[in-house]
Image (cartoon, rainbow, N blue to C red; front, side, top):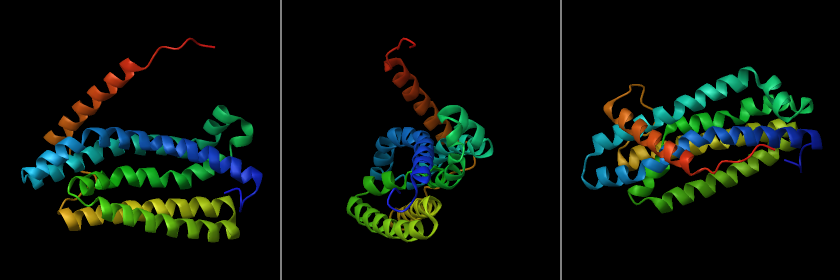
Length: 212
C-alpha cells in the first residue's frame, strides 16, 4: 500500500485491515473443530451428513461476522476514532471495503478443509498461488490509479474470488456444498456445542493480567 498511496492512506488502510482481520476469528474457530468430523464422514461415505455439517458450521461462523461487520460499518467512524484516535476515523471507509472479504469467507464455509480432507491439497495450493498473484497485479494497477481505496477494492475482490472459487471447486470435486446453511439443524447445534466447549477451554487457558 505504501508504494502507491500516501502515508495517511497507508495508515488508514493498515488500521482498517487489522480490524477486518478480526472478523475471521469465528471462521477459524469453526474450522478448528470441523476437520476430524469431515475426514470421518468422508471416509465412511456419509457425504450428505458431511455437507450438512459443513454448511451448519458456515452458518454458525457467519452469524457473528455479519453482526460485527454491520455494527462497525454503520458506526465505523466514531468507533475507529474512539479506539485509535480522531485521525483514524477515515479508516471506517476502508473497513467497509475490506470487511466484505471475511464476511464472504465465513459465508462460503470450510471449502479448504473439505478439499484438504479429500486429498486435493495440491489443487488448493495452485489455486491460492494463482489468485494471489492475480490479486497482487490488480492491487498495483488500481492502487496507482485510485490509491489506498483501489488497493482495498482489489484486495476484497481477490478474497471474494478465492472464496467463491474454492467453494465451487469443493462442490465439483467432492460433491459437497460448503456455503452457509440457513436452518439450525441437528448438525448445526452439534457444531455450536463443540465450538462453545472449545472456546470455554481456550478462555480457561488465558492467563489473567493485571490492569496497567
